[in-house]
Image 1 (cartoon, one colour):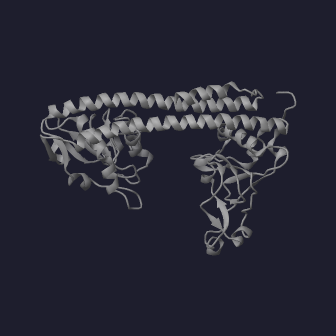
Image 2: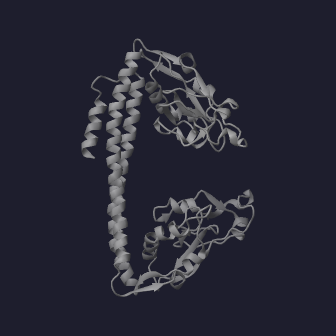
Image 3: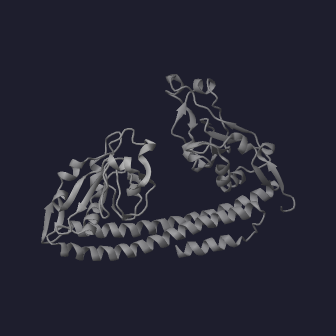
Length: 412
């Protein structure tokens, strides 16, 4: 540890507190409220200047909610946002899923903020809970913090702010490039299917299919353990959404009982989601079962090309998703596809020729997307590296990481 630095438990340096939730059944605790009330999901903002929710003075008094002053460091303790950290820039209350670390004259709030950004993974690793992590206030209070004198804290914060501003700018540039490369491919698909030329026909999907229908999962409840743990892959909507054209992995499998109440679809079947993640499309890379929230389309190779049909559905995804909007949970049904006409070149050979051009462009744009994503990931790693140096007392006045960041910024 650098000379003049100390290691302290947070409880030795700062006071902490958690928020609270006024009774939802009491309308007077919420209606017409003017006191800002933050939820844990709003903590992942860095600097926090506003909130969507408000409570009344009566709600504040009659609950464990409390007002935190400006410059309080807020840490989300429960659920999906556990470990997220922000700095409150106005007076506000929070719910009980947020821990507030109160400002004082011993530590710079921004220094604490950066420390807990670095410590997020450590805190989550210590968290308890099954489905989602819970970070106790006690663990936050016992966090060990390297504590230099105030001028050194301010110097570190100044260096981090400069470096991170440059990193974020470079990341934004790479994200724009990433978006442009994706847009290039989508624009090409649009050109293919909107400027069709001669020799195209409008067909229903069942006209080009050997098999066309919904998946099966008859047993209730569907999550009964007795269905799973066998040799038959079971695909769900999320695995269709996350696939990169081909579904090449699965997280669950049916046993013989599961298969009996379902249906095994052949490798090469196009899967189309009709609930939750609607109109997402991917091709099975192995034989598999799936539920009725997915449509299976086995293309007749004499009538259509498999890859052409996949790209066709990719292009029409946005229009199909629009049809499913408006219900409590977005969904479409088999009829959406049965009754719709889709454009196909008359011959399979013509479809294959179009696919060659689409595949070539797809390969090139994916190379670009991979490159830009690697750049974005590298900048995130650079951030972590700078933070680690900061809290080990290794940041110098002309921090090399800053010049490295500027180099990345020029490349972007």
